[in-house]
Image (tube, helix red, strand yellow):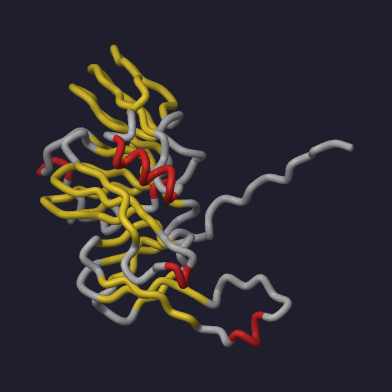
Length: 224
């Protein structure tokens, strides 16, 4: 797996059409089709058609309904230059070579149509942690991931690695994932701390951790 985060993504030697226009914007040289997050298009040049992408069958639809995982997608067909972005989030590219990547569905910006996706429960993060489901992307091709704030890419082979479940954007699908608890129950009385439990990663691979637990929800004015 090659990543733009490492700076080792030699696009001249890789097939496909994804490139970073800048750190906040993805450029797709489209000659066919691509799957992207609905509403992510900011501009395009050429002839393109945008259509809602279904859930890929009743099984996937039920998984989305039950788990809440995944994000609405659109299929873009045509020829030209397509620009994608999401709330000025940082964008990182991964090129999978018959590999799999586990991604928080909300952070999945775009991917090649030849890749397969599925919603799966994160191993080790079951009922005790409230349940955690992510999207698995596998095959050969490009994947564009967003992160809220500049993230860090941690090599899980170097040392035991732990991350907040909302901050872990994506990781190598082959990693062993568990739940780590770091606070005693008595210390949480009267506190809403979410730091008592993190995801624990082991094995050869990486985890991409964003610089926050996700964008803050703006306050709502409901009137009197």
